[in-house]
Image (cartoon, rainbow, N blue to C red; front, side, top):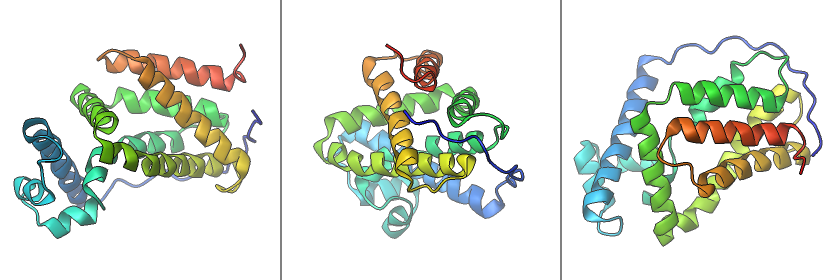
Length: 207
């Protein structure tokens, strides 16, 4: 795998989100929490967007402002944003993979166990509900784009650079391989296996 250059200008620290952003984050989290609860009790197909919106005390139009489809309420979570922000906070002298590893460790350290449980529940839905499984391809593409943007920012390359996109795709592949291989119910176990797999990627995938 072609290594990415390590040059990146020192970026200013990100400001703390304002009240508006925090309220939006709470609304998004509430919609997702109620959706997963209803899917658990009523089943995915039997649950409507209107029922989710009512449980979260928002309008259906508000639901769609946060999640374009019902499938997205399963697939889209805040984990990507959490660890990408952690990656951006890493020292500029770190290589892209080293920054990803450090950022992921920081993100997992700040993730409550109950949020990891919700991630596992959402992934199980993505694997068992055909409509969600089909939509997950779009979500993988979105995640690759987000990782490519973070890598491009650190490396000084364009996010559409084929090497950057390939690198980002490899990171997503590592994450999915670890997840599908089974990591138990422990966040610490998954984080450890993910870090070791990223270390293998960092070493050039020796066999």
